[in-house]
Length: 407
Picture 1: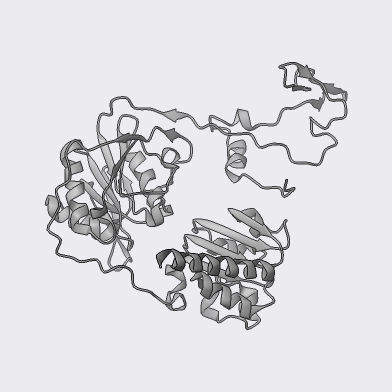
Picture 2: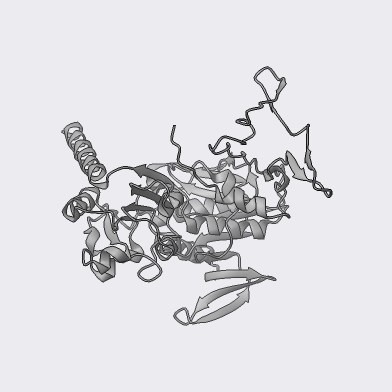
């Protein structure tokens, strides 16, 4: 089993926040303390542990109490309080982008805003098109989940999706519709849906308070306030994501079938794009190299095999291995990739700030105690050259098998 110490930032935040309902459960048990007269006091009820047969045991060696053992104690499992609604008074409908079949950070911000509008009596209904890979709707704030299946919603099909949303609107009559004002499809779908409903939507909304919504205007230099409409297209970071409650995410279904629209748009599929031509701020998959990369030709081959956009730390750029426009971090480019792979990057504070909005971070490093390993969702400890060689071989084997199956 790995001896790497992994931190739980959320558990640490709960332990510091005295107002949090789980604050007491996150406090370590106090077994001994110094009394007012200088005598060490011991709590006999706090010593020992419960054995497999339900009997309390006392380990004099201190291994079970953490006295002489340097191993990390098992993290306290946090069970968030469950929010249930048997009969919602109204619905707040959310249509997340679901890029790659999962909730993005923008989607989670949108669900956080929906929870503010729903309060205690309303339910947040998430509408998802086709198959998805998301398993954390409950912790994202979803009370009801409506999946609209069917191949007619696959690919670029805005007209058919508008038909599906109109059927949902007729059945549930939500108080508000929330869609992400993004380039991943939410912005266009929201405007098409607003035209179909005859509504005037609020766009680029970043704040809602006291019945007013505030959106960006004037090329992002001014704010425009207006009364809260029924259809809202919200920007990223419009609200804090849900983090302190879990919800039922009960599946619901449409009572009627969705009428097929007359397709006036033909989806010809995705167009291959050179990853090197994608701007760093818009790239969804980034392979970034740092001071730990010794074979840069191998690094470039790995990026080409994976189809990833190349990035670099400031050290690699200063040493001349990568151009300045590929620098990631607070002093370079802030990135919002869905997957960010850091190869040989220790994790300076400026670099960690630049990747703060990335969904998944994978770290490849020789040092198990570096800050990038602590930040990563998945850490691989080992020589970067050997790991990149194995990655290239695995990708080539996968593609060869796919070609054989297709033939």
